[in-house]
Image (spheres, helix red, strand yellow):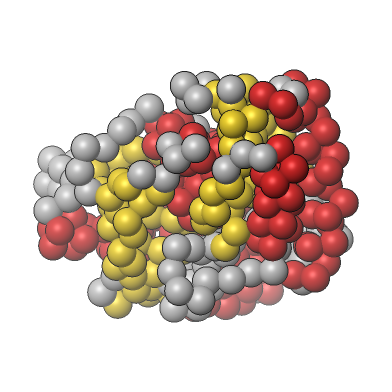
Length: 317
């Protein structure tokens, strides 16, 4: 017997089926098409693409695991587990999930995109926390610092802080598209940044704007645009973007560890797949002066996927 998970986020359509024992039986996802030079999709356009893509992905999943083997269906029906959290794209997963559950006469779990990210991160990192932990959700649509604890079928989440304007993924994508990279720009920006090397040659720096547990990325985005216009090296600017995000998180997480006394930090979301960011944060925050313990999903499980949604469904059906 197995559980189906569905997630229709801003840029990714995904389905996954897990066994009742937590084994990933099948997982399929598809990036929504974004026209060259654009920095994203309008919600109506994204909903249209989900409606086209989801039946095809479900057909692939059911070719691997017949629908008659399902014990339950789970779907991310909203972005975060807070009152008023809503995005039209999640209505596609919610509607299709409820239809399938009703047709198969199995339970339906409505969960959230953020909880799916956290569940996938814990599974991928091979870590099951016994108590509260800190989590950082970094993507194109969310940049938040959270205090988290487990509950059946999800998490208790308290937001400590987050971005006051642009999300980390938006900073990456805005600068990347300006440099001619394809959206989403994260993987290409990371490759470009490696050309900057690790020496002290031609360095470019972007400011890190932090106030308490809150931060801002609009200033660094404007700085990067001016540097590009002035002819600064693209690789150096790409590395500066990575460095800016790393510095910002360090300045937020250090006091969070001290204030809460919580040493374990889970970092999830598409931006968290960046190798330089991982290495920098480990070096700075796992130092004995701070003593944090960082946990990351594997890069391929950091970006949006339905695996975490399916794993949460397994706990309650």
